[in-house]
Length: 404
Image (cartoon, rainbow, N blue to C red; front, side):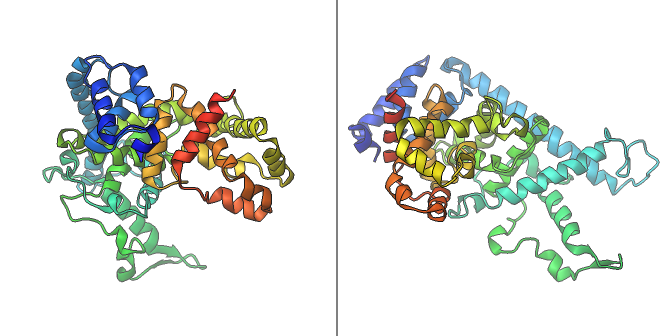
């Protein structure tokens, strides 16, 4: 499909990419132009292109080896500081329960390590709930990774893993409930073991970890390093396609480090897109409200009749464009189509500017249905977008962008 979209064969296309990627210093402008029309799936080309487009890999290939070692070592250090060391401290609690110690679980001081630990658990439970249902229509995220994190799974480390933290916290929440007289009831042990409602969430045996567990770790470390934003629901939908692209790289040298590379690419992407997740910035020029209004402004300019119809039905942009824009359309299409859209978003110099014409194109391509529909029908169309041909959407978006 890429070949027909560009008018070149797959073989020629791969050669074009290889030519640009073989230069000692990569020509970013040439790479962006190529990627904008879609990156081939073969040979790990997309994973490499995304690492460059997301400002992770330097343009000078001579720097790659030292740079990657430094970043991956840094990520391992994050895991030690934010997951392993607090886990060891918690495991040691069983050995020493002396509440006269300076820091202990009942310490009311907000700077207490235990206070932080319990707050982290709240964030972790929200992440856990979201990553377990990541792309439920495909089995990938439930499958074991080929390269489980040895640092985390090291049997020499007697510490509480994220998996154990979630299990214990969920267990406590599900087994203990209060009746009206305030007496605590503990539910039967049989029920307590059923932490999650279906077998698709079965935990893999020790020594293995599912891809969703890796995504969980990435998001937890990000939340710890960015306390101002921490974790907001939907971030899992931004990490998912990046991790999938890197974790399916045919080269085991790249695939082995998919977790660390995904973390840094996600962090880079969020540095450009985080304003959408910060509620206090909603009405500012960099916030989500401004972007939602921009979609309707563009529509008004390109298709006044459709714009007036939506206005007349009181269909506001926040009813549907909030999700489109914040999650970069990751919930509107199947994963391969999301990845294809992201090729264009990442390679556009003003990448989130291009998202506005893409959303506008999505509206104009269903204009006849929207003009004929009532409020309920149209809301259903907009919240469950009916067109799956992303090439048609991207071509239309490019026309809208160029037609100034």
